[in-house]
Length: 92
Length: 154
Image (cartoon, rainbow over all chains, first blue to last red; front, side, top):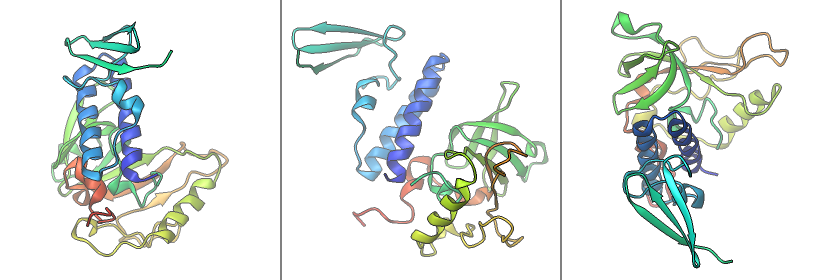
């Protein structure tokens, strides 16, 4: 595991904790930094990170707190409080 | 690669406990707390009173507390392994780092990195304390990881 991947993991955890504390702007900073690290080191982001962060406003998503999650036919819909929607498929 | 005294300057600093041991501005000396944000030239430290203080990196000396991941004295062996398996050619961003002197009680006084492993009996507070000349951390936070050039695209 490279340093970059570890940093991304640490930042994801920090962003989650910041979101739990209601520090949404701080959580956005951590998410943006993690994305930048992934981009610079060409290592991609973990699937968990992609699914639990908002592509639009970069906040870490906590289902039921700042994100609504609904299951539809064949896909999950995640709607952030900022209004951005993300969808990903699932197999029943 | 885990967060060890050797990898500290390339690793994530946000979330670590830090104490400012020396700084050009005397008011900043002694600030202790958790790093909540980092810019190219500064840290933002949240103190235990909940205040945030912005500390410049240039010219200051920071003492980081690294969390111990493996219980007991395993951290010292980790430290030595990490020192042994990667030789860093001198690069401008690593100038102040002395990876040679990190073993406890073998460190040269002038070395900028000093690691004191906590004893397994738990005499002192858990963690490894590393003192770093923060001038070595002057870089964009996202780009610090790659500065030694182990990216395969270089």
